Amino acid sequence: MKRIHNKSIGWRVSLGVTACAFGWLLSVASFAGDVDSLIKNVQSASSEVRVEAADKAAEAGVDALLPLAGLMDNEDQFVVKDVQHAMMHIVHYAGRPGAEGEAEKAEEALIQVLENDSSHAAKNEALELLHFVGTEEAVDAVSDCLEEDDLFEAAARCLEEIPGDEATEELLEALEDASVDKQRRILDSLGHRGDPGSADELVEYYKGAPAQLKIDALDAISRLGTPVDAKFKLPLMAIASESANRRLPEILLRIADVEAEAGHKKKALKIYEALMDGAVLEHVVCGAMIGIAHLNDPETIGMFGKKMADPSPAIREIAAQTII
Picture (cartoon, rainbow, N blue to C red):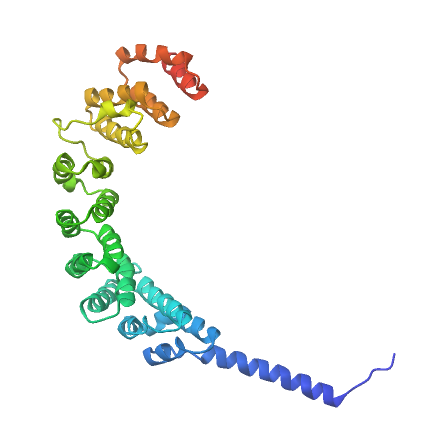
């Protein structure tokens, strides 16, 4: 077959390849790694340029956080999304192990966002990012945000993650004047923090809490991993009530496990027995039975006989294994 050589085609192909290569080089070089380049490119009309700038934002360092926060009220939501990604990359990189100095600077910048006249969007993003680098230095600024409805959720979630006693104290203090819905959210944060130091105050709160919040307070208490006061009366009778919250048996099971771990076998047994006899959920009954078995008390063996005829195969199996 005769080979045909077309110089025109070859020239166009060569030019096309060169243009593609040149375009690729421009793309690679479009972000210079400095703050000014980042701020310019993250607002570009080109999504490729914005994404590249956001992905490489950590190269610009924490000095870019404040100017980036100023872009959070941009009318173009695609720009806002890439600004968020840029801030996230910077903070995550600053919070890496061994970079305490950078983390501190990132925290300082985010605190400034909260304390100045930044937009709500910028403050909300700062609260989300303080999860990663926030310390007790940020507690006051974050706590002030609890008073703003638009920032309350993010502020509560942020205090939930910041280590140290001050964050716990601020959440407990916020319980005093917050609305019912906000109190429920704060209780959730206190439970997830799992700070044993909040146990006494949460027990006192529970005693005087509105009826609709008692289950939330008890849930928080159950997650602290510490035994409650021996005089604290648990709502064991409510387990058998048709109106009982479905969360209650699981909450009580957690409390019983904590008491058993602490060596308070008598108190743990009382809760386990109430759950074994009154709980409706199969996994709770099984958990209570296993808890009783782990107490290694020969006198409890007789409790399992009545469960040998239970309709649940899982419950019958645990009963049989325990008796054997």
